[in-house]
Amino acid sequence: MTFEVHKFIPEGETPAITNLMVVDDNKVDQMIYRRIIKRSGLVGTVYQFLSAEEALKHLRRKDRSSVDAILLDINMPRMDGFEFLSAATDEMGDSFTAMVVIMLTTSLDPSDEHRASQYSVVKEYLNKPLVVQHLYEISEYLARKAQSTAEQG
Image (cartoon, helix red, strand yellow):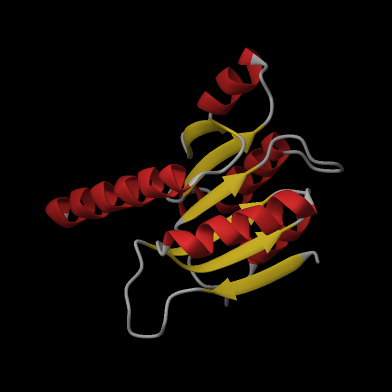
């Protein structure tokens, strides 16, 4: 698996998180995430990537669905989470920075958390494992963001 799509909410229903991207090279973690995401009932579609390169390639596609939030691991081979953030920010600019990125990691290094905070697109830095509460927090953030946008527009 380098890329999988799973739809969890039936057509016609509006999920709290329409499209969630998960970028993590660990297959077991990805399987666990998929189960947690499905059980939460908060996510319409999840796009799972085992490599940051494949996720970036997907984001470059003009015909892709919008992505509301990205769960991004830091420690991955070839392209780590920070390299992914730099490349996506440089290439996509505002269209990328409008997304919500949550760093989901096992790293206990405070410098990683500080480095993540330097990217405006990173809204949260969470330690693994993913839990349903994290998804509720993401959905609440997206709801506040949508309300703020509606009030401004």
